[in-house]
Image 1 (tube, rainbow, N blue to C red):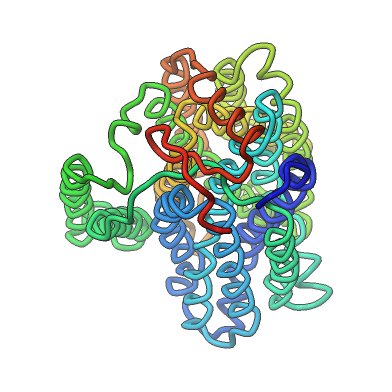
Image 2 (tube, helix red, strand yellow):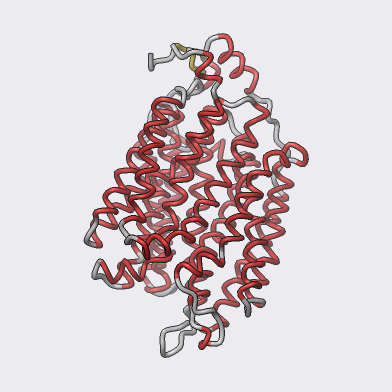
Length: 491
């Protein structure tokens, strides 16, 4: 039986979750700035090396919602431990990889780590005092975005001081420590749902996500109007429609379509799709812009390390405003923060499009964007956690994170196509490509504001009383779907 003392140590639990989430976020963007180096050292082509990034996005998109559902069924602590172990294995495989094939396989395994964040949100929802949930979710969300920025900053120094293998060894060591701490510190989930994994729904979900993301990722190479791209988009639509039908008729759906239709859920997911497009495209193309030699009429000829330093204020802003978003949400509500974050991102993208002649201008633009991202990411997570019952926290948060990934893949592909639509003989994109690309992202943020305004007011007291009473009176009990209380099977 778990002791009340152990369950009350939510601060220590939070520290463990922060370490695991931070390591995962760090790993995400360490690779992006060094793809040309990987292409050279792994003796592959530019087209093939992009799969180091694409394979990760595909894997994360497939596994994140599925493992969120697994956590809701078997317990979020067990699922989180398993995800961290798989993430560590994927990082070690990448660290020892000497061929592009093994590197891509390693990145597929690393994509399983996408479930770290939604499972962590579920643990917070289950274990933390109600008044601490929004702050904790805000900090973890901020760490996710902050870690991505830190990855861009550290990639250059790590490669220059050591070698690219250490881009994976360092987060692997942190993840192993987080896994050990999770086993000993994070309590077993007191809130679970009955059911099983719907294999057919899982295969259909995987199918339409893979078709969609391959089409979006390769459209810049194959052509948006090519038969392969159009065929994949059509296949994605058909499989998605079939997936929805299967889920609606299933006794144990993988993703509860009734939950996904909740006004607070679908509107927040729509905002997540648009923010995903903005953040991934920014991480990918601002570094490319900064590294372009100024002789081309724009850019600063920055090194990998210098381009990371240019983005440092953005990284600090993401974390700082993500941390304070919890207390702010208590005063003004997460919806107001989400709207504010989206509003601040609009001028940031348009300034990036047309005011970028000096390093300080780009830094100011990125800082403004970092403030918007910090507020918005934390607010989205809080809204999703509050909008669904506790037994659906994992899968709902997983889908929200997943939709950000899908938005990122589509956004990066579309902006990449715009940027490369006019390339010089030397293979350098014209400045107009960046202007048009960032302006499009500014327009996307306008749509994000509209979607955020549609989010309804939330009732955050729905099942809170039952959970808190069960944990205080019978800490060994597990609340399952429908309010049934059973013994903890883990004992």
